[in-house]
Amino acid sequence: MEFTAQIIAGFLGGTVEGDPNTKVHTIAKIEEGFTGALSFLANPKYTPYIYSTQSSIVLVNTDFVAEQPVAATLVRVNNAYEAFASLLDLYAQSKPLPTGIEEPSFIHSSAKLGANVYVGAFSYIAENAVIGENVKIYPQVYIGNKVKIGDNTTLYPGTIVYEECVIGNNCIIHAGAIIGADGFGFASQEDTNYKKIPQIGNVIIEDYVEIGANATVDRATMGSTILRKGVKIDDHVHIAHNVEIGENTVMAAQGGVAGSTKVGKNCMFGGQVGISPHIKIADGVKVGAQAGISGDVRKPGAILLGSPAYEIGRQRRSMIVYKNLPDLVAKVTELEKTIEELKNRLAKG
Image (tube, rainbow, N blue to C red; front, side, top):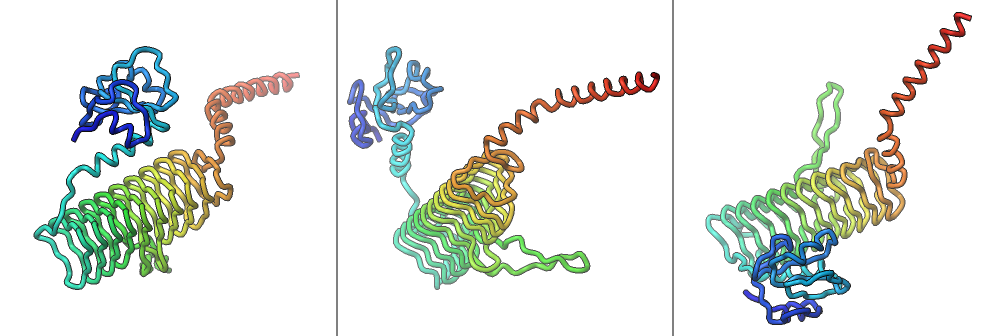
């Protein structure tokens, strides 16, 4: 499928600088561009590539000022990154999607499937499951008893959804994710053994949530583990029992949220962030990679770094001290040596 610069500009509400009839049929990074490809420039560090790229069309911000000739046709938009994301979405939608019920697969007679549902081979849909319209269930997916899945949701291969969990509309669950496994609940006994606490709750995933590959969201001990509307969770993230994640919060890979913690909306967590149980995190909090949060974060919009995590200003000052510790140790050692010599002189009179 080909698009001209004029068509792209019209779709994005931008303006063309160059030949409006320039055609593209694919996309490429600006540094790897070639004839027939469309690229974008949003990060200033990639500006040098716009003068050498072989891409036919490049999306740029309206305030971009070229310092030398540019061979590519430019499409100027308010936000090149957002515009490119919109085109990627259009490109993805143009790809053909699987349809129908493949064999072998198992669908219980009591399960209800909406219109235009795709079920891949070797998938299993248990009794009383309710599947909405236009849902894509790729091969080897397991959907347990009484699970509810909303319209336009996609479950990629190997996804497992335990019984009674609820997934909303327009969600994406990537390969290998597990929704609704037992929370980590055990009671210690006098003989040092542990008694398993039955986990009788479920998981509720609201609309427009995306969960990365091999992520896990545990069911509640009682009640529900909840991911609110618009939450985005990266690969290998673990959400424990009875956790609640607020709207539009995002978490990068390998993070973990311990049980019964409540995370506010519009928060951002870097990779490998660990969050302790039974705490509350305010709205809009941002946390740097590998941070450890061990207590409540009450200030909305706080920016935290480090383990234990502190607000960014305090943590930066601490980092300066850490950096200088070897020199400080050397100075203290030298002072101790000098003091010992003075003591010896005084003792000798």
